[in-house]
Image: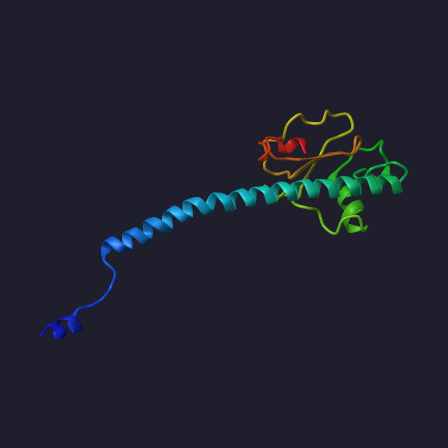
Length: 159
């Protein structure tokens, strides 16, 4: 008779066993997720530095090939006010300096805030979310438009 009782019993997990497994998975997730977030943050920081390096290098190449005049000035005339369209045409559309405008890895924005010759370069990132980069042709200064500091405590704006 005992054999018949064993054959009729259903086997499965008890509620306590399931709760223990869920708790263990929760603990493992709590350990693993910050590690992935840290790597994601470090990847964005590395991308930002590399994008800035590429932008700065290509701006210098352009200026070297155009009598010291950096991109952004209409008709390569530094007496005119710089703007985004000439920069776009000179660096991307009609040239091989950049295949496309790199995006700010934190905001995904590719739009440049052009700082005019007689304007002071901003001391900190702009509050607006429209711009990914800030660029002043007269000084060839280009910076990442993003607040805060990286994992080493360096301000993104100071890259």
